[in-house]
Length: 79
Image (cartoon, rainbow, N blue to C red; front, side):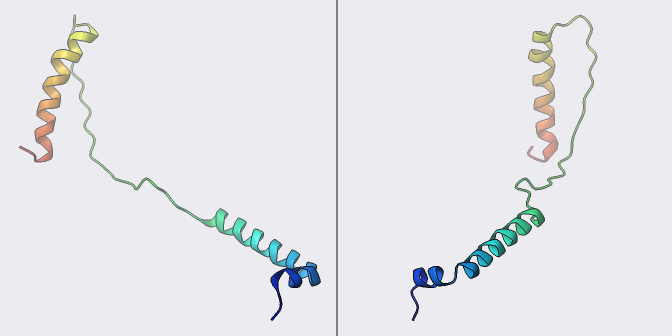
């Protein structure tokens, strides 16, 4: 049985060709792989436009946002 180090020293061209083949194969595999770690969820989206004149940002956040958060929570079938 031939030692791997002796084989590499006796046949450097074979090792070079094998390394080029491994690098080329890895590069081709990397180019062709299509992996997405985030799946397409296709979640429903709701847009709300509520005009309230004369309110500043703090009043909108305090009064309007809490009201809609409460009612949209029930829209998912939880209540």
